[in-house]
Image (cartoon, rainbow, N blue to C red; front, side, top):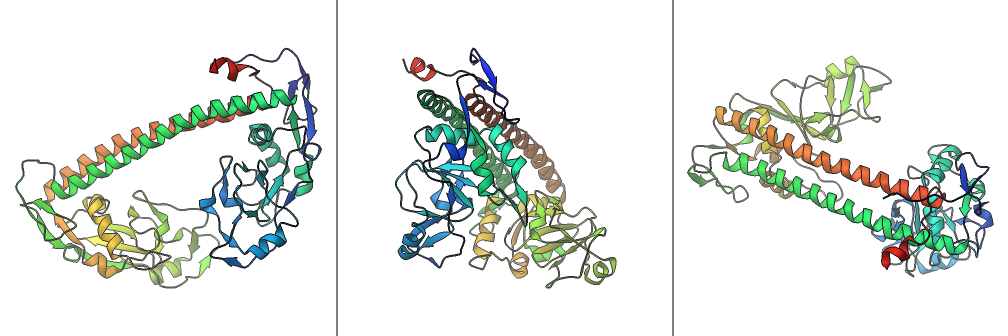
Length: 446
């Protein structure tokens, strides 16, 4: 759908804003607020289990406050004290002003009792401004560019209160602000519904992929094959000609990495890897992956080779990688399994992704805040083992199926990215006057 433009434009006087409709104003935020822009307390309160929700940056996303993501609650006494500086009100706008999500905004949509912490700047619109219009302006590409141009870095990115209050905002006539806000509520709801459909499709595809993997590695590819009990309740029946064995009987060695902290160096070809570096079959190096010296590497190295499968056993339990000759030293949260001649490691890779094995891991893990899987639990894992030739057929089948489902998931993700880009572009165009949406909500409703 294409939209008309306004008949006349003028220079806004702001580089990141460009031209705006001739009859619009462009004002700093401090000129459109009912009260000076403020923030939450600059102290860490005593958190309590049951009290007033204390909202910080992690709970601000997608224009809403997500109370399921609050860090903790504060006492009624602390809330009363903090409320002397600022007390939330319906349609107040919050902007994250420090940390990785600097610039993200949300609006108060109900009368839930809560308070905010110092990473949030609170903006209460005055008579000149419609809160939902201002919220959308602050979510536009133009405003987010202004945030990026004006933030500073200490230990993390942040933007000062004095900078925020002087950032410019377009101010159309008030009736026009209401129309633009109503139009964007209507149109972004349509886009959000399409995004939700694509997300549901992605989940269905992932569920189907999981079902295909689980069936192939526990029931085989021949639907007519005779079955037998596996002896394991969580595994059920398996093809009668498959061998049932403990994983320890099908491996040359199962172990984990260094139970301690190595001596790091600034730069080398040898990396220290933990379970969180294992992802989607690969060893992934990140910005936080540390290096060790060759001496340290040789001191603590273990026997990794072409038979090795790596498995996360702490935190990200169950993440997998096929060792590809990387110069890595393992930490204690990464286990290694060296398969013997009866078990293909790529078959084990798919087997460990199946639903029954994930259920086994869930039952075997210990720990309350961080999950831990013991080496003994890995050794005692029941394996339904096809003959070697059949393992090869299953692996080839699953590689093809995974590629197919991966392409479908990627296609859905591309659709989501395009829809979200469309959403951002529509918001930006409407609140900066690049399109004229006056009257569209009423005409469509009619």
